[in-house]
Length: 157
Figure 1 (cartoon, rainbow, N blue to C red):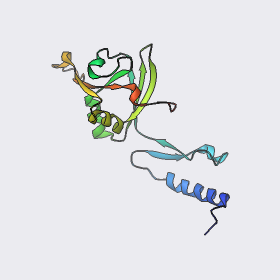
Figure 2: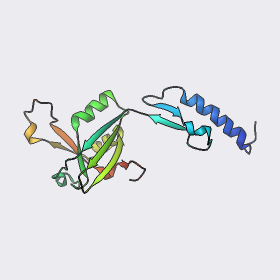
Figure 3: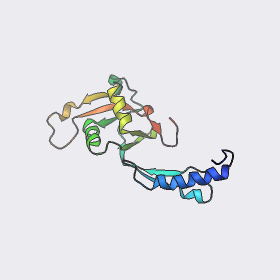
């Protein structure tokens, strides 16, 4: 057994393990070796590619206070989108690009994060009164959420 103090040996073992780990697909995401490892073996090991969807949000949900969410940071996501993601893309990440002029942020959440907000009762369901008889494909209901519940790109929350 090699000494635990032989750092170079263990770095080489780790580099070989990284190659084997990155080769197969891991569920719904792909793992790729970080090409920067060629020059800096101490940098992070991988990049992950996962299914992702973008929600561009430009209209504030002004009555969100009825659902316990500040209208400055509130947004909605259609119930039918949550259902479709659950069926077709259970491991998806959703990016929320929110720009209300006085509030701009880009947040992201996994589908499980969104479902947790729903099941915990934080995200309330809003039924659209004007869409009851809609036949154009508009969502009949959406969950009201707060952008501050989710991580911001760049690591801030």
